[in-house]
Length: 221
Image (cartoon, rainbow, N blue to C red; front, side, top):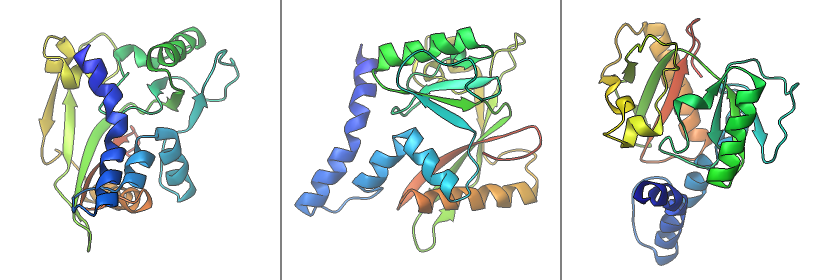
């Protein structure tokens, strides 16, 4: 119950920055518009896509049914459209067929009371890019999540349990490597460029983290 309440309250973080703005209280980090934008994944993806930043193909569903001819190739991943901190993301969120997709969209609609964002699933390396500062912003050493291969074909994703539930096997199924291993210089520069573009387009300031997946062909999203 406490974890669920914490997820619900995360939507109010932009209000805190807004109050600081109104009261003239100095603070660090993103302003209210940026915070509200980045917590709405669909809105963020539209902005990034319009500026040529690579983001997986996607659809938004605010009601059932999900059409069989939705146009996205499987596998896809289903997320609540307005959560952060991996809220609402489980191993079952990655689906390979229409029945499983419908079930996950239903779960998001009923449990989270918000639209479901469906994206093409990028199976590959997960890189977190920390950015610090403004004039100019600086990319810090890349962090890679190294997932344990469970041998059952389950997707290697950062679930809510992996972040927050020490009683879950997911919590112990990954490691963190800084800097990322075996990162070609050209790919590293591409990751830096994409992350800095996302930082600027969404209106981040002072500090932020941009999460990416690298597909099997070495393309970052």
